[in-house]
Image (cartoon, rainbow, N blue to C red):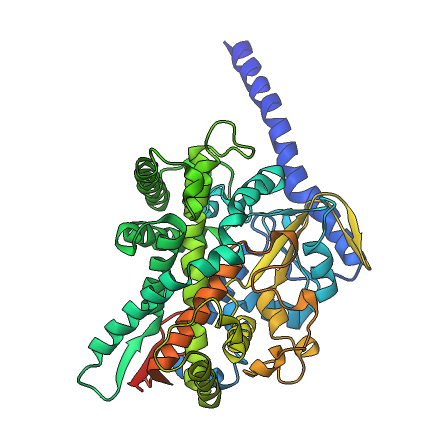
Length: 520
């Protein structure tokens, strides 16, 4: 009996030893070796904890920034100088303390934060395969559920195949053809505002809610051929999914944890299942609608993807892949434009002189009652400048990242394979060394015709081959909506507004965006 016990114990120990060695190698030896390599280059960062790295400190900085009192936040709105510290406090704190680039750790994985536009340009426009898209979830499958295996989360040949299918849906000529429908949706929203303020000389609206409803309706109709009411349940489910995904991104993922039946994990699985089910029903209805005629006749994104699901298609997409892309565009198509319109309207409500200039231009180009159209939209130069400056100060995505697939030299940087490079979009956009002494001020003139900027210094939609495929739709929709709103209303910032930009997955106003509206 004793011999059997001794044999079993020895076997257990021998089986455990390789596992322990692997853990020690992953959490001790590899990080130690990489950290020495960074230190030799003068690249340092916050002290790394053995298992979690800097995840706990990262979360604490975000929580402290979100809890800043409203009065202090509102004072920073006039010059936008508190945005970086509140939205990406880890970047603000650690770059001030350690300089850039600096390194911090999520578990045993290093993240090098680089804000040099030359490096950003080199990495984002690289075509050699040296840098991989890290995906929306940063390697955390709980966070990656929001987009699934859509364009945002894909890389390599699979990403290229999906891109070739999706991109034609958003070329400028096709987007221009959608302008009348976009204008009709905007007009309906503005009519509701008029009814709301019918008996008031001035009334308050939370434009954050209004623009989200608007952009949800637009992306539903022009990309999927459905209405906002039909897609509303998907949007609500994705909103909750976004909040849970944001929480997951702030923690170190333990392999296999997504299968542990915690309350949040069960909720994540339910949300994912419900969204997939709703999208599958939408796709099945679309297949019935197009039965008897060619899928190629459909001018929306869903029609193009269904075409690619047919046998014999050059770039074949399975129904599951179409569901993943629908998840991506339902979410990204709504969030990007809604947030852009929210911040742009707030900025014009704050900077009345620019609101007057933009309105004068709209009335000159479109008149008092005509909607913008494909022919005159390009003449809205000031509106375009306002939107571009809004994207500089309040970009929808505040970070973009790439992972080195091999050891590589970038200028003086020696980057080990597996290092994730984090580019702080919002930090670069607010950098006085890049944009000048007025970098924290709202100045649309910096985007006047003929003025240029460094390619790696302005990237609200990314740059290079992975630039946002929906950029044309976002900008056209925003121009149409902002122009039409200025035709009918004047805006001022409400006293109930608290300037609290907050990062969830995109840059949002934490307490809404209340403005006072007057009928012109």
